[in-house]
Image (cartoon, rainbow, N blue to C red; front, top):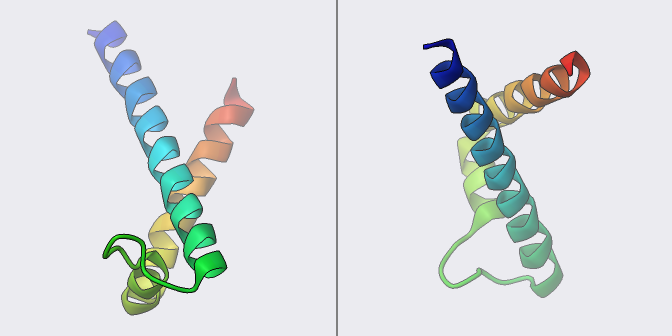
Length: 71
């Protein structure tokens, strides 16, 4: 059972890391071309979500940093 949770945790960390990478890439590309990406507006979505989205991102980044430091 412990092995299952370790595997699940590792997959979740990898998925969150991939999602953050994809989001950062979307923001950078949108800032460079100054237009939506195939109907996706990552900068607008972040601005609309406001502090709640920034708080979630901060928690995820802190968690990932904690995980890397613990290893």
